[in-house]
Image (tube, rainbow, N blue to C red; front, side):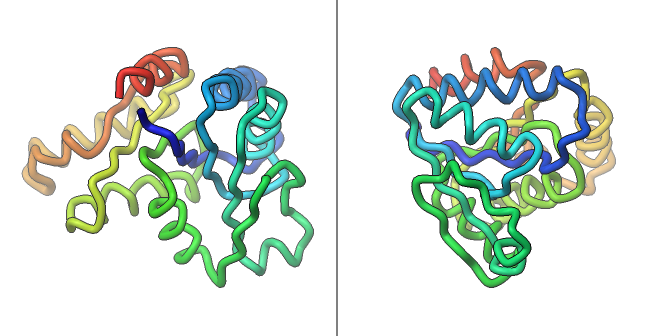
Length: 180
C-alpha cells in the first residue's frame, strides 16, 4: 500500500470552488485511509484546504516549508510535523524523498516546477516514484498535449509515459492510488 502521498498544488485562495471541493475529497481519502499527506506546508489555497481535510479525517500531515516562507507567517497550523528547509530546491527534494507517489492537483508555476522536477529526477534514476496529474476541470489538458507532442517530435523518449499519468478527476486519482 502506498502510504505517503505527496501533493503539489496551488497556494492561492482565489481559485474556483470546484478545485477546493476536489481538494477536500482527496484530503478525506488520505485521512480516512490512514495515509500521510506530504505537502508544501503553506496556510493558503489548496495546500491549506487539503491539509485541513486530512486532519479533520484523522490523518497525519507533514509540511515542508522553506525558512523564508516560514518567516513571513504562511506556515499552516495543520501539520503534525513541519520540516523547515533552506530553499525551494531543498523543499522539492524533501517532498519527493518523503513521498511514495506524488499527486499534482491544480496549481500554477510552482506546482508544475515540483511535478517536472519529480519527473526529470526519476528519468535520471534518483527515484522510482510516479507523478499523477489530477486534471480537474481540464486544467492539464494542454499540458498533456504538450507532453505528447514532445514525445512525438522526439524531445523526450516514450519511456516518460511510465513516469507520470494524467487522470480527469480526483475520484479517478483516488481509485488509481487504491490500486497501487
